[in-house]
Amino acid sequence: KVGSYTISTADDFKYTDPVDGSVAQKQGVRFLMSDGSRVIFRLSGTAGSGATVRMYIEQYEQEKLDMPVAVALEELTKIALELCDIKTFCGTETPTVIT
Image (tube, rainbow, N blue to C red; front, side):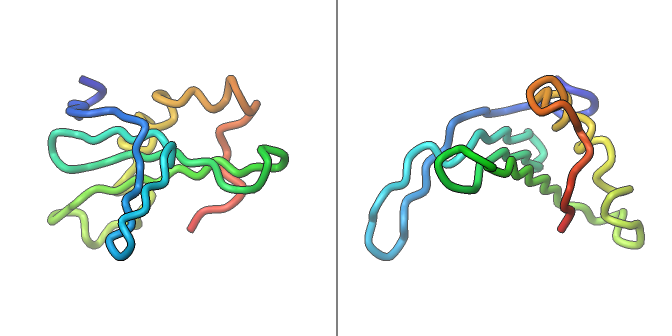
């Protein structure tokens, strides 16, 4: 249990292409919560030099529709930052890009 969430699964996930069946291994680290929310960390970029750590935070929400996304996802975002400890590894927890 982390905050008000319960992690039901955590894995190093793979992607299977639905068209040709090819499998891409080691696509990121995924935390699936019991309520269907999920936190995913992936590297993007080439050869590890200048790579970007992407953090995806997804949550189905019926009640917070009028809130700014950052506010609605605030608790899950804090949990994600604690899970990855990105500040220790990268020296910052402030994103350079938010989409």
